[in-house]
Image: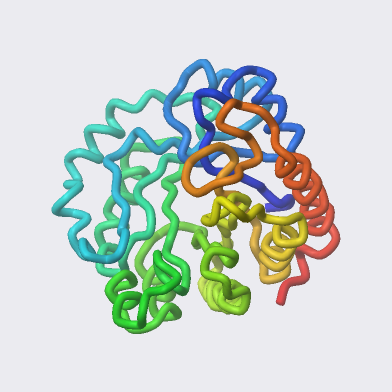
Length: 286
């Protein structure tokens, strides 16, 4: 990948006019994640060269607190994936299709089967999945809870198992340093995944936060810079912001009435800085 790809999670229906799509392009956002198959919006994406990762094609799976660890195949049998992919009608704006979010290592062998389905059925969009952070879903989780989520004792082992089992050319994880309130954990997470990506020849994709878990707080320009520039330093080729519109949490670049907030201009600025930084330093990583 010769240029940094920047994505953003969630585009609510109140933000899907042509002007809204132009705003996405002007903010230097290359693709939207967790998009549904909305043909009118996808047509606009195609017009403005914006990609989409669809979330409504395949059965939904989220690992959550780990209570269902190892039960993905039982809850979402392969037959449902086969039927969904057989019925899928491709749109050129669709880059990827979401297979599931924050998956336990106990479910990696089943995830491998799903990835192979894409190959067997010659599906054009790539299979997308996102992994746990090094603190698990909840920043306050104790060690045993994190292990229950990961399905193994350490986070490094979790990432290694993914790289060894799942035949994808990237490792994607989400980490929200201003919700867990520990930026050192973020740098540790980048380091662990970066090491694995170098070892196994995979790209690193990172999901960070532009919205806040605390409605009284707003993510600052400097906090955005810290996330995306450090991700690039550790070798990230793709970075995604959560969330562009209301998806989860509070204080988004686009308000619930579809208006740009002050965060929009900060996001636009930091994305431009990040792409320039990547061009200068992206080939030199820690």
